[in-house]
Structure formats: C-alpha cells, structure tokens
Image (cartoon, rainbow, N blue to C red; front, side, top):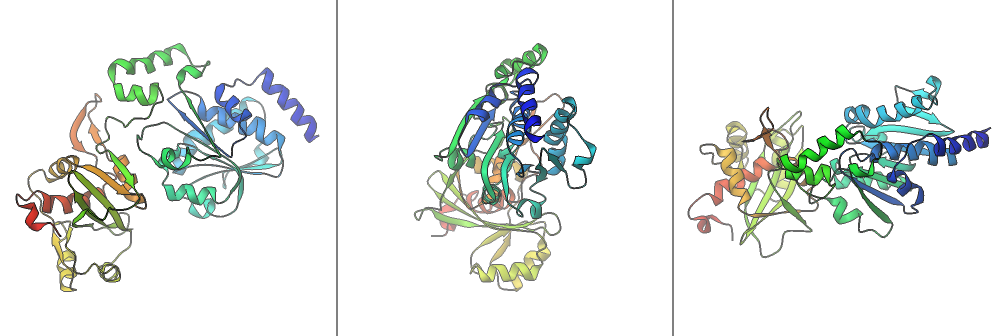
Length: 398
C-alpha cells in the first residue's frame, strides 16, 4: 500500500504540483547542506515544503523531519500554515495524523515536527534525519551548531540576504559538503504580475530593499545602524578603552563588554549576557573573572547598583551622559570600523539587528529603536565615557 501510494504521489507531482527551480535544486543535490538564499516571493520556502512532502517523505519511512525557526509565533504564521495548506489543497490532510498540541504531523510513516529556538528542550533533545531551518539568518552561530550536531542526513536552510556579514557566509557556505543557490522573484513562474510590479517598484523607491528583496543580493537594510566584521579574537596591539555594563533582571539581561581601540578600529568582546543576576551575583562574576580593578562604565540610571558594587571593591562608574547621549554614542561608534569577536554571539546578533525607526510614510527618523541594545548600550557607555574626552590619550588604558 505504501509503495502504491508513493507511486501515485510521484505521478501527482509531475501532473499537478506546481514547483519551481528551488524544488529542482533539492531534487538533484547530493550535498548534506543546501543553502537557498533568495529575494522576496522567490517561492523558496514553499518549494522546500513541497520537496519535503512529495519527495523526501514519499521515498522514506520512519524518518524524523524537523522544521524550525527562531520563534514559534513566526513559525506558526508562515511555514506551519503553508505546510497544512499544501496537505489540504492536495486532499492529504488527516485530522487523526495531526498532533496539534505538539505541533507534529505523521506523514507517510514519517514524523514531521515543527519547533523553534525558544523551545530549547525540544530542539536540543532527540536526533533527526532531515532539518529545515526557515529564515536561518535569525539564528545565532551557537544555535546552528546545536542543531547540526543532532541532524544525521540532510540540512536545508533558507533566508533573505538582509545581513551583509553573517556566519552563514563565513562558516557554512564555504564547507565542502554545502551547495549554495540564489533565487529571485523572477524564478517564480506562478507569481502574479501585480506582485512583480510591486517588487520592481523598489528599484526606484528603495535601492537597498531592491538589492535584498528584489535581486536577492547580500546587503544591509537601510535601517541597519552599524556595520561590523567578525574576528577570532582581539589583536594584541589593540588597547583597552574600558568595560561597559548594563543592568537587567527578569526579562532584560545584565551584560558586560570590553572595548578596545587601534587606530580607526574598535574591537568588542562580550563577557556576560545573563538574566536573573542579583548584585551579589554580579560581584561574584566580576571577581571570578579578575575584573575587580578594571574600569567599568555602567548605566548612570542605576546609581544604587553602582554604589553597592563600588562598596564591594569594584572600579565601576556611572557612564557619562550628555545631551542626546544615545545618538551621540551611536555617532561616536560609527566613526570607527567595528570588529566583534566570533564568540560574542549576542553582540553579533544585536549589532546586526539594531535599527533606526521609520515614520508612517516609511521615512527614516534619527531615533534608534529601543530593541537589541543590551550590548550596544554598554558599548556606548564605555566609548562615550572615555573617547568623547578631548584628552583621550591620557585616559586610555595602556
């Protein structure tokens, strides 16, 4: 029965299922890792799902397929919705095979599970045979490593190239077992003309959006505030400016970074990014890292915490905040070429996602979003408190 079903489905693919070049990439590739970079509406995600349903799952039985994204609400609203739509459209959906509470579907003797990085126990638990990561550029390098360690056969990732610098380009695509493909809306023969026209308007209205979402090329969003490069470590010739610290507790993390300079370069290294830290916890961490004597500039809005840590013997100070200190700090950082150590996962994620606000018309305004700044803020505290001084050389730590 399974063989007959498989035969019918393969025939159905040729006759009824509308696929594009993305499906053909997956069908022909023998590589362990397949990277699908694409602009908007290229059909990459939809065709990856078609491949999983009508190729991989019809040719295998007893396999575990994991489909994941950074957060579950995003996964549910996009990939899971499309997966169920395909099954229903092809009259394959069966209520009894759908475990809604666990977001799992039993398909032709295989288990297809939908999960996200905010479900860490599920992600880091059992092994899987095939892994599909949707919008993989949302993930940290550490997330990727945890996922691939538990994947046995094939890994497929897709994303819009909205990050000019990313671990996917540096650490995945160069692998010998990886095959890279790029697609655009022009590779989707089923796209309505009206949608094509809207995408092509970007050519005139927003050059960077056109580059990313129209042409599917690497570029940073025009809203992205900083550009940076990753380095293995801070070079020995760079001089320490200071440490920067931001305080959090329940939802926001307490963070600590060190910032170094050499000529027109800044180097950032992340030391701490943790929630639920009391004053005693911070004291013990700084002591364990031998940072008691090093100058630390922290958020001046927390004078009580700073005072308590000073009484515990730490060389911590309130950051210098002048008029419009956020933009002044951003401006100061942007004067330098920024380097971030590759182990500083949270710092990389924040520098990538720190953006200017837009008004209702889509015009950029000179105000940074109050998001992705738990590392950015202490970088500002350290640099602005020292580098903004006219006699910086006197204060730089030799």
